[in-house]
Image (cartoon, rainbow, N blue to C red; front, top):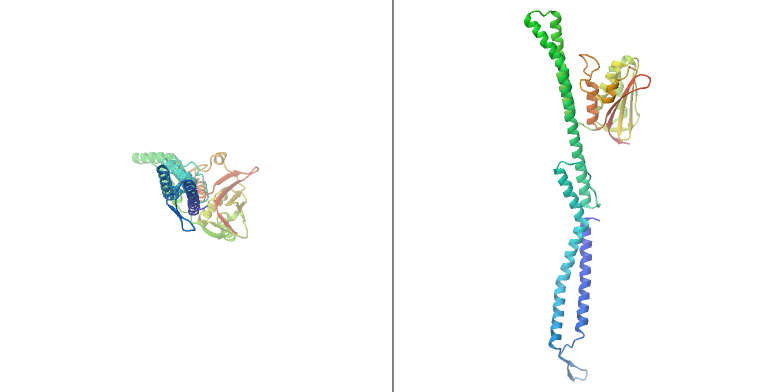
Length: 363
């Protein structure tokens, strides 16, 4: 029952009980006073006058007291009924929700978000508790996301610092040779190569930071549009391997179109580098998630990569053109879209990368 309706029902009920009690008081007082002589005179039907018995002083005091009780009851009982309705209203409708909200505010003030708000009713305060719990969940998700980004940034900085040690050492040695005048053409080429490599490292770091700051823009798109764009991307990145693309024919979904295609480009490009003869791209919906799977017939992922997941600058070999950032950036984009990135090897040969994105499905 709504708060306003509950208050009106309780107030009316308590006032009605107070009026009934007031009527009972009057009945009792009148019943008692009827047992005492009232005094005065009585005029009979024949015109004769009879003097009635006069109440004693004690009886007069009792009658006066009964009158005072009646007058006081007219004031106290209705006001008491209203006061009782307020007390009952507080204990029935307000006490538990207010206590719950106070406890929740206190725990949030102490940076404790790992709890749930109990909902005691479906009225306005119950809806407020539900909204408060939703806010708490959003704060918890935001804090978890900030913590994850901070941890990822630590990992990224650590990997970046570790991978820079070798180029810096080589550059220092080459500069030393140049100062001594003993550097040859190979040393100059090495200096140029490692300078370019550091530049690429810096660009990779900058691109990852841009990905973390990129907003997610949700719009409605058809499966047919995604299918055609995946086919076009596959032809450009892996046209020589004759890739196959499968996706639903009908329906629409709500997602960030550019973000999904960026992940698709990374996964397809990565698969094209290692595939021997074919690549299979499969798009399907499972519950509230859109799954994009890219399978190749290459040597498969390293066991360490499958167990620990993509890492920044996690290249399998020294390659100045690739720093292993494709899978790592795809993982960041999947997490931004409420999904995940999973890597697995098939039992015979080949590997599969599956990116999931949280969506809102429409019929």
